[in-house]
Image 1 (spheres, rainbow over the protein chains, first blue to last red):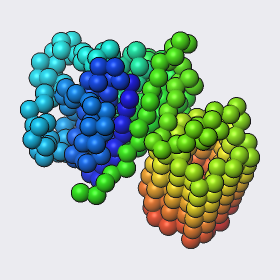
Image 2 (cartoon, chains in turn red, brown; image 1 turned 135 degrees about the horizontal axis):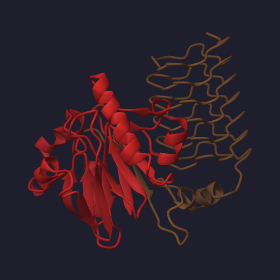
Image 3 (cartoon, each protein chain N blue to C red; image 1 turned 90 degrees about the vertical axis):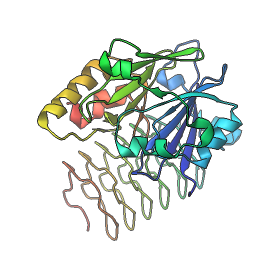
Length: 184
Length: 167
């Protein structure tokens, strides 16, 4: 699996392009802004982009949806409405040889989600979990909800799982379990 | 639109499984020589001056006394790495992950620490003179005895230990 990380100029949000190297199927994760680097990465890898996954509905993660190049305007968006109606449905995304599982991670926003590829050992966390930190919340209740989601959905994953967050550098489940002061 | 920073990772499956230490994270543009060097069991005292190490995975690496002067380590992961006495003068460490790293007495003079994460890092006696510390995160880090004269920017210093810091 190939992962491109782009650091956008919109609040330093990360945008990712994930490609299955065999089938060339690809998924864009978050869309703060479209950039030439993304177009180049898609072309250089002959990637067949099958959709855009939005980790949560904040402008610094989705405002680029309004400015997509013409050929990408009709791409499906993930998660689907069906997923939000019932989180046990439509929670898998197939990307060539890989299967991604959508993880509900509410707290930062009600619609915060992550995407986990077990066979690749990688997880996209949006703004739920960062290297050494967690996403901001508006209320104590939201904060508790977020911590529970992190504990129940993320910290149970193998410690060597790579974490690609919505802002900042890559980390791993093991590093966060051991050192993240917000999870103590 | 200005070009934005990008890093390319190759996440490879190995026969042993997806052990994180087995995963190769290669930044774009690294030469085979550099990749071989980074595979070494120890980088203690290594000469890595001026290299492009953006996005490289050096978690827990032994870089004690290594010379990284002027190197570019954007988005690099050096969590739990041993960088005691390392020379990081004028290095670009922006957005890098130094969580729980040992940076005791490291020379980070004039380095760019923008948005880098030093959560729980040991930075006692580090030299940060003239460094850019805008948005650098020193949460729970130990900066006792560090020299921050002429460092510029607003860092996050929540629960940071700063005894005898030199301002």
